[in-house]
Length: 65
Image (cartoon, rainbow, N blue to C red; front, side):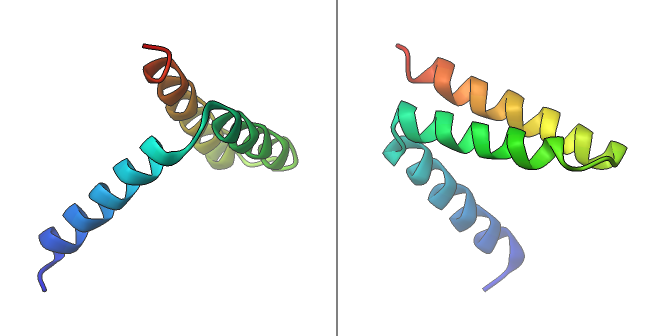
């Protein structure tokens, strides 16, 4: 199996997981990320945390409609 096929399968699994998560689960996940990120002093981790926060808020926004 080539890498493109594997990546596409991972994307599909990620999409399925997004649809199965409830708003409450997404909020809990976001809170876990924030808690974990607040303990990490590195800039790289701060940037990663910002990305995760954005991603989660976009998922929550999508589910409003």
